[in-house]
Image (cartoon, rainbow, N blue to C red; front, top):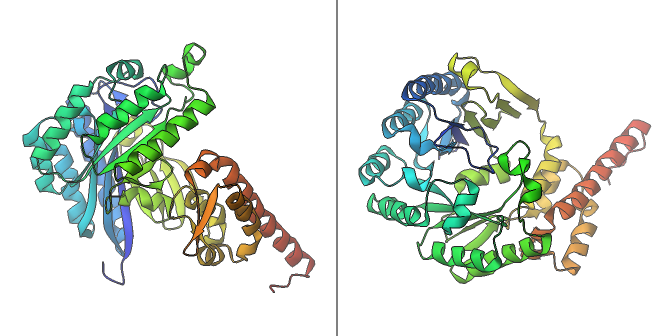
Length: 398
């Protein structure tokens, strides 16, 4: 990357999917026809071109097609979008270009080869489970055999960076079920794995019948999490974020932007951005987007000094963690204000300091919400103390 250019990630939201899963609260629309997809392609193309002048001082080093199920958008439409990115932005020769896909829509070797030649070099496959009964309960339309077929097709197409998404703490799932899914998934030899606990989201079918679901209790969920950490480590997958594991050199460069407060621009209805010191999101409304109306559901200017809480919340989700220098550069006050919390966590086995950086242990990740709450409260308390001292005219920076 040229020294005078800043890195930028692009996120392109494709809201279409074959059917809505019972747990999903993402903006996704099942049953859309080809004409609607063509219209959405036109709207996205226009949107990408309109924002491009704002990215003149940037080099795009990651592009992420998320959804929905972007793979059902069609090979030609996806290639046209990536071509628009190439023509309108400075796209790095070594950019990570990710396509989310579901197993049933990623089995065509010819189509996958065409995408690879166009520049797509990473696939994120929504597996969730290798147990057909678990998949049925989730409302997934693929089977474990479909997963194996999709992985085989992806490899035949020459794509060498494959991520598989898994879920645990599913209704009726035992630790033995989860362990078997991990074993079956590792056998597919992906470069990256994401493991998320099921979360019941408001407005989903699961939420409507939550009381009747056989959900794991907190202790069982914790055991499942620690089982994943141990099993994946033994198989050569290093944990680098609460829910993410990879072989060396295959962490998700795009997702790292979110955790490290780097800039990214989102496109499509429902897409989020953190670009030019503004965090904004587009309305989850396909109709207005197709009319070319880029309506915002939120927009907030975020000065650098107000990034302190975000730095702590996001940094403590990762194994990279936080450092004294980074914290003081962002907050403009001493690390000593949060250090007592970190020292208590270290004594409890929840945090460690390595090479000048603090990060949580796997046990710490289990209670990360509480730890992050304590750390951010300590930082905000110091921020308020300094503001009050300045207001009284008694502030001393020493």
